[in-house]
Image (cartoon, rainbow, N blue to C red):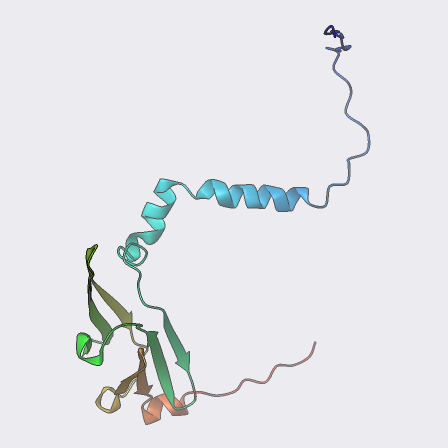
Length: 168
């Protein structure tokens, strides 16, 4: 079996661009996706995550903040943390949730001894919207979920009004 080399014709002439542009419906989508992925550089993360220095490094708790007619409700998932290890403070309109998790495990068998310890803490601060009645804030903790109800003041409830939209 001998290798048979083939010479392929190579043209160095410049061809004129076709008169009609080719139809490429996904080209702009591909360009946009490429641009987004190219933006993920170390500098991008440094600039974007500067406001959240520990958010991605330490596994921050998931927090939902929902508004209803009469109150705001904050729900934080804190699995594996006891209520005594959670601290909730309000200062100058900033609500701060702090917590610390301690976990240790030991197993002793004839062939081995296993000892594991895990420690970690988190802190999450949120600027509360205007119109929260700070005296009536209520917090509860059950099954690893912290629920904080932040009632609106009477004035804040009155300021809401529905605006009619006219069909054009």
